[in-house]
Structures are given as C-alpha cells and as structure tokens.
Length: 430
Picture (cartoon, rainbow, N blue to C red):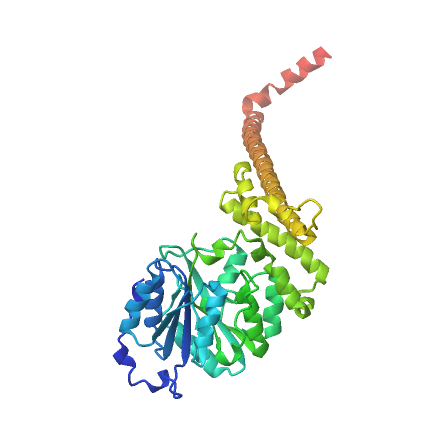
C-alpha cells in the first residue's frame, strides 16, 4: 500500500498543535508482537506514516523465535520515537498488551497489532475526538478487513458488515447502550484493539487475562464505565484476517467459546438491557455459540467423519480418557469429567447444527425446484392460453368476414329476384 510510506518529518516541525506541551508524547501506540516477521515492517511503517507525529511507538517482543527482533531494531535505529524490549517470558497477547500499557506515557493510548495497518490520518482524527469530547472514554473507527496479501475482504453477512461499520456516520452513544447492544448481539462491533483509542487515565488494570478471546470487548466495557462511546465512520483501520492470526488460533479452544458466559456473568447488571432473563440469555448464547462453531468447522472443511475425531482431540488436548481417568479406589474429579462431557456435547451440537443447516438447505432447494416446476407449468399454461386467444381472434376474424359476405349476398339483385322461388321450394317441402 503506497500511502503508508513515511512522511517528511520536516513538514511538521513548526506545527505546534501537533505536539504535547507537557513534554511527553500525546499518544502511546502500543504494539505487542510474537513471531510477526511476515507483516511487522508494514505495520511499523503505517505508524511512522501518520500525519499526527506526537507519539511514541512501544513494541513489546513476546519472546519471538523468528526474525521479529531484527526488524524492530532496524526501525528503532532510524526513529527515536520507537521504544522496544523483549519480555522475560512469553506473556501471550493480552498479557503483552498489558506490558505495553504499563510503559505508556502518552495522554492517549492507541493499541495496535503487528499484522494490521493504520490509515495515515487515524491518529489525527482520533485525537481530535478525545480532545474535543472530554466525556468520551472510548473512540473507535470503521475498519476494512484485508487478507494476507492486503486485498480487501467483503463482509459475508449483515452481522460482519455491522462489525466492520456499525453506523453509517460519526455516532456517539452512551456506555449503557454500547454494552447492552453488544451483549444482545453477542458481537464485538465496539472494535478490535487496533481500531480503538482511549485515555491513559482510564487504563488502570489493563486486560483481564482470564479471557481467552474476547478480553478486548471486556476491556472496552471497563473503559466505558468512564464515559461515552464515539464511532468514526471513516475506514481508518485495516484488520488482517488470515490463517495464522491469533483469533484463528483460538477457534478450537473451548475456553475461548466460553468467554461469552464469563462476560455475561461479569456484566450481569447489563443483561436486563438485552430484554432477556439470565436463563434466556444463556440458552440463546449456547445456540449461537454452537452455530458459530459449526460455521468455523464447515469453513475449514473439518466436519467430515474422518476429520471430526481430530477436532475432538484438539478440544480435549489429547485423548478423552485424560478427563475421565481415575485410579482404583481414588477420588474422581467430577468437575473435570463434566468439562469433558461439555466438550463432547459442544462438538455434538455442532454436528446437529450441521444436519439442521443441510436440511434447511435441502428444503430451500426443494422449494426452489417446486417453484421452478410451478413456474414452468404456469409458463406452459400461459402459452396455451395465448395460443387459444390467438385462435379465437382468428375465428372472430373469419366470422366477421362471413357476415360481411352474407350481407353483400343479401343485398345483391340476383338474391332478391330468386326470393319467390326459394319460398315456393320451402312450401313444397312442407
């Protein structure tokens, strides 16, 4: 993407309002990375290409084993705003984000990911929102999904379209509405970390690392306890979806799917905003989780009989017997056994969802066939009716012609002269 080339920094040297008067940076861009050599350079360049230059770029290398560190050091040598380190141990994504947040010194914090990209005006527009709206605690932007090659990916459903752009124009809503609506939709349209900016004064605590996948949504909820939510309708974030992404890696972790129950429990006081009781919400949540899980497995072509066993083993983390092992005379771990049963039930529900989806598809196909046959019959009947109408019109034309000939014959002199003879002939018959 050509517009991510670094700008001429000299052009900003006299623009005083671009820089913080406090001596520290206005924005801390936090970039956690683990084995990100494939995309890291582009991500860094998209930060350095920002029109708003008063920032620090914090890069936390989470014990990468590829060429990540060499890439970081290369860019750090050419730009003093880049600060980097290698963690003493692997902290995983949310823990690594927390490491960045703890070291941030900017007034605002902009989270980022090593495989995503920022539009050059992203920092400028997000800073303007927070500067001009003191009671806004979280600002996000519309995002564009891209593949491993940087090509745009279209939304495959209305829900995906809402995730990418929840509102058609710049919109501000209350925290209650933002939390209640996302809980009801069971969808994070508040934005991934790379699409968000918030105030450092509200960042205390960082991510809850007990969450496996939607810790970013839970963190958004906590940030919103301090103010409103503001959405920028411009596409300023390019979120990369690819097979190696962190979210894809979590798709077969049972705990990642159970995150929504943890979130609902933690924010139970917002459930009335969804219009459902606790029990209704849990049942709806289970239904949607299994539907989503079935969709993911179907997309990966792992629902066939020769593949599903492997899925079950991945969820078990090995053989199922590890969940149901008990030495003779030993005490059983009922909680562990129930977890194993839950895994089996989860996969079974996904298989049932597949059968239901295939039946619905077949039913729709049958309806399409019926409608097609009915349409063919209707077309044939319509053709017959039109042919009959044409035949009747032709007969009407023939009758009109015959009436015309009879009229001419009745008016002829010869017809009038032979009238007495026709009458005499008729009388003789009688």
